[in-house]
Length: 438
Image (cartoon, rainbow, N blue to C red; front, side, top):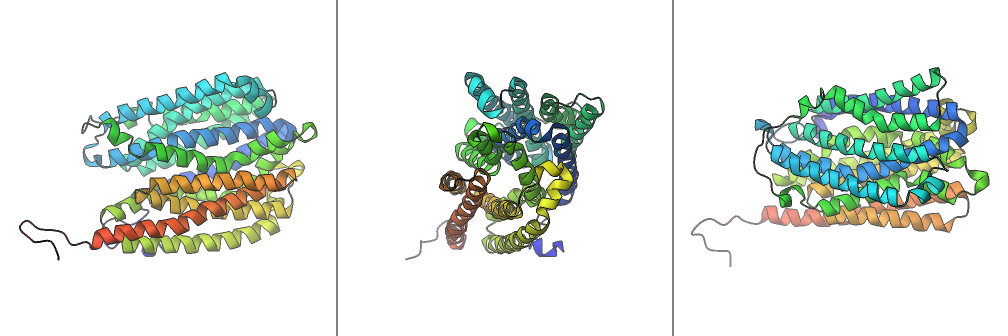
């Protein structure tokens, strides 16, 4: 089955996907159980601040710190044999701390607006957001170290442990009768810290030798484009519940929670794709470095075909069974329409395609193309949401159009970028004393 994904030489493509995939599978199950439990305990209205905390953390957290993970993994990967990279780690950790400080300062400066408009007046959720922000800064640094070292087993354990800890906390809150929005918010914020301490044995598993001296330019190469692209991508994926919360009137305050319940079920394919995403980018980058452009193009054609089939199958399945699945997981008060489920699932399929193509663009050093695609996608999301009056439908249409636009930009721009790599690879190598071609 995996034979079609093998390189002509070297290790198999997606070599670490099994270990990471196991962690993602466990995390996915536990996440669905946790959110379903929170929805049933709190009800649609009580679940709303939890849903907006979830959405905001998964915009700002990966938006700021996924590039940190990617760049740290890239630098450490080059020193994997000697377990080096300590110099780079120090600089990247300072960079992550700077991002966290900036985001915290912005949250403090706008705390009244965030509490009133985003968290429905629940001040405790702002504290949960701040704590969760710093927790994810540490989590993504740790993930960068583990991916760089090729320790995908621990990487998978880290992903799984976070969701297991969160679910255990949610069950404990429910059994003790302490189930509240603030309690579930604290579980979301604290679970990365507990998982990190357990899996890395209080950080001992993350120790590195000093390794090669790393300058700031090396560890921040294309960081601006990476942060912009990641932030826009996470905004496109997670802005739906926030948009529903901000656009809803006083009679619709429960609708952000109901929207997240539908979105969580519709995004099953995206959640499972994380297993592929964690190992796909470094493998594609090695193909580019070795000049295996034809093989890279073949891999991307297979990815595109798989994603196209995924869009068709999951959209149809969600139209038929999506609403039923939401009712089973969250309860009857969360039932969305069949059309909503189909649109959200189709949008997720196009988003998965855009994520895969964006990884290839980053591997080919086309960071600007990746960031531009996600920026176009988010702007189309905003424009699409403005075209429709219905609260749910406007966000669903925006998500669909934005995902299609991001994938479209990459489908057009990436072949042009790879064509330049092909030209470079075919250019004859000059030898000392040889005359250039006439």
